[in-house]
Each structure stands twice: as C-alpha cells, then as structure tokens.
Amino acid sequence: MIHNRKSIRLKNWNYANHGYYFVTICVNDHQHLFGEIINNQMILNEYGEIIKFTWLDLVNHNRGILLDEFVVMPNHAHGIIIIGAGLIGAGLEPAPTDTGLPEIMRQFKTFSAKRIKKLRNAPSSTLWQRNYYDHIIRNEQTLNAIRAYIKNNPDQWSMDKYNT
Image (cartoon, rainbow, N blue to C red; front, side):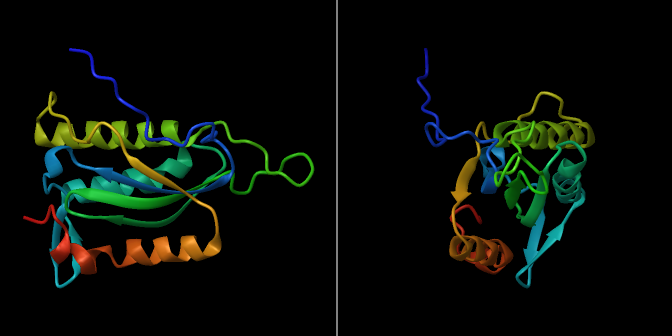
C-alpha cells in the first residue's frame, strides 16, 4: 500500500532562511517517557535529561543557530530555534546558514533516539513520531506569545488530551 503523505511545511519557503521557528516534537504513540509533572513542574528522568542535553547541544553542530525558549514534557518537547543568528551577509541581509530546520530536526531526533534506545536496550523501537510541527514566527508579539506558551506548558499539563 502506498501512502501519499502531504508535507506540512510551508510551500516555497526555504527553511534555511533567517528566522525564528517554533517546533513541537512528539513521542511515538504519545508514550510518557521523559519524566512527570509534579506541582506544575516538569521533573525530568534520565531520558528527559538526554532530550534536554541533545537540544542544547544543537548549537555545537550547526553554524549560525541560537536556541530560545525550550521545554521537555512527558511525551513531547517544544522549542524555538533561531536560524541565521549572528551571521553577517552582504548588505543588510544575514548570510544563509549551512543547515535548515529539517536537517536540525533530523539531527535532534536521531541523536536523542540513539542515546535513549541504547539506555532502554530497545534498538528496534521508534522513539519519535515521523514528523514534527513547525511554525515560522513572523513578529515579536507572536514570539512573546509562543515563549509564554512554552514556559507555561507544564501548568497546562492537566488539560492535555494525552495526559492519561
């Protein structure tokens, strides 16, 4: 059976363009693998610490990116990646980066999955859902709203449909 999967990326947008990108990455089957929420605070377990480390380590593998707000939740993670940060281009435009968002997300998912699979002794399991959600942040008002959403995500866990 052939599945015709539609891309959820914005058509004609170069995801290596300078910009702020909000991403959400979900665990396969919404399993609660990364810790638990206690008193509206996310308490990371060993796997959650790997997710946090892998996220923070992305700046060491990708030229011209910065990481903004980030949270690990029991079954997903949210973060903001700034692409093209600190790069000087010709004229008023920043220089393009070597790496676009799809490659950065591939790295994050691959590196974190390998580390966690090794600890779980589950080499054939799938950690992440196939894709990820992204949103191109186009103004400061939206940026601030998304930052608040990420910071407050543990407070909202009791209302999450995957909090079983």
